Length: 228
Image 1 (tube, rainbow, N blue to C red):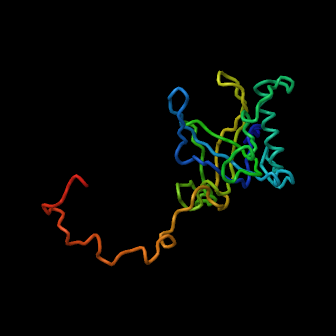
Image 2 (image 1 turned 180 degrees about the vertical axis):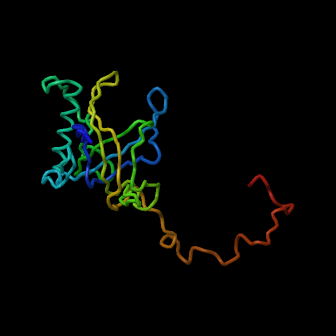
Image 3 (image 1 turned 60 degrees about the horizontal axis):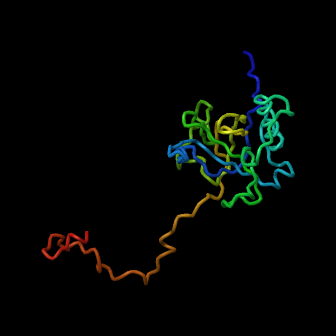
């Protein structure tokens, strides 16, 4: 059987932190013209120190290598496919490239980070799996809130395909989200749920039966339905 040739625009990010994860329900955005756009999306955070010392890794063209080396190679391949030799590549602003600087954002957890912004059209739902296999050796599909299912704040492996855009919406280099796999737990983004055992003290409640007595007749003539 002929071995499939590796895609030079495909990168598998290894052990990156997921943020703004929309893989179970699409992200909904209202456009300037009033229309609604639904997409699958995620950001993937990587510490700048891990990039600098090259401990952040990715799988590219069948090999594990430093993350930024893989992303730059995939980006170059996408640009060459769209625009030809490097001398013809457009100069793009930072917000027009899928690799971004977390220090330019004011979001929780983005300080001292680089992040990959990836998305997919509604009809191109990315695969989403756990880190467990079934009896046939296939990765088990993830379910919202299920065991070993990805969430914002956890660590994941993620497959992206880099592509260059040049149309009426402008010139960009984007990353399409193709697949995501839970890798390890992390601190979830967003406010933690409130624990009533921590919030409420014994002296905050009345005597038992002060309110909500079962023998109250809701049909008494004195009831004022306007207060319901």
